[in-house]
Image (cartoon, rainbow, N blue to C red; front, side, top):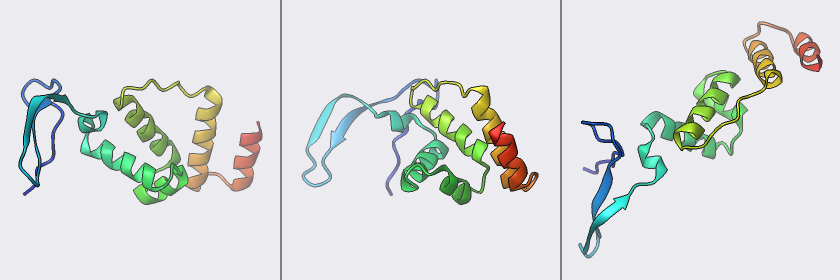
Length: 122
């Protein structure tokens, strides 16, 4: 049974390092202190989201459908994944937040497409 590498100590929550590598073919071993990739420190949920993001070529509308969540929720998940990888995300300006809210209301059927167009033009 294969086990997945964890990146965080279950006792103190600090980063873990790999100290031994072994070839699955010839069984050669290399010892040292090897750092894991940024992805090894992500939760399973974030890794799954990133996998789906790549699978869908970054198409947020496709992610909405596959995850069965709203546009703003996908945007929030993307922001959290980017931050978890150690990058800073510029805060959305008011216009973009308003646009996301309008699109979310449209997706939920709370407003008509005509009303959404009107609000987006404002």
